[in-house]
Length: 292
Image (cartoon, rainbow, N blue to C red; front, side, top):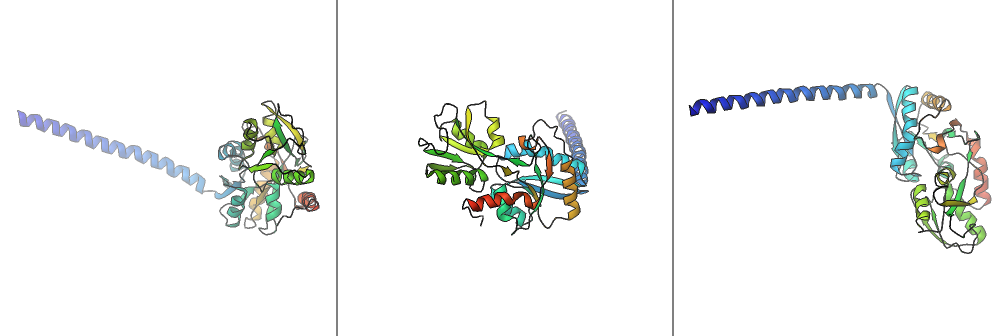
């Protein structure tokens, strides 16, 4: 009786094991087929990677730029992937090594690298007036009694990357005022705003679009820069012209409908050209800033 009982138990457990094994194999097969089908769709298109300089945090870049990448994937014959840069220079290095083939750059980095890297400007964002220009602004807390960069009470200021126009313009202005406040650089524009709001620094300079997000949250604008061209999306010279033309055409037809798109893309794009950035280069030379 005891042997019979053991035999029944053994057969039962064996049956369960065999059934579980084949069921697992079945599920795995389904999942693998799903992955293969997904990969086939992606691999049927040539893949290009689009970088972004570190003006925003990686999470904000994915949230704000991914809708544009998704749009390009729908409207072109190619597949695009988003690659946030660790810094402004990191994005340029990735372009030079062909780790990425396109990039959303800042004006200064573009001017510094366009000849050496033979960068091709494609499009740039439009402002609310449908013009390809923007500004950077200096901000303080609303309760601050500092009213300009030349204010004698200004002792500390937060700035984004040393390679950003926000940083370079501020330093130019401070030199004109013969002011030498404590300067601290941060990776992202939003970090600069938070450092000012938290009272760690008396002022900060950021892109106008970023400042606009916080105008009703405790900051005020005390300075506005000269007008500058909108920063470009560029291509590496290694990219085929037909790919560049498809990207350009798609973005010129882009009609922003996504709720989470970053503010600078809300008004669409226009074609970017080498000549757009000449006046900015002249301004920098006039103010004594050397691009190289």
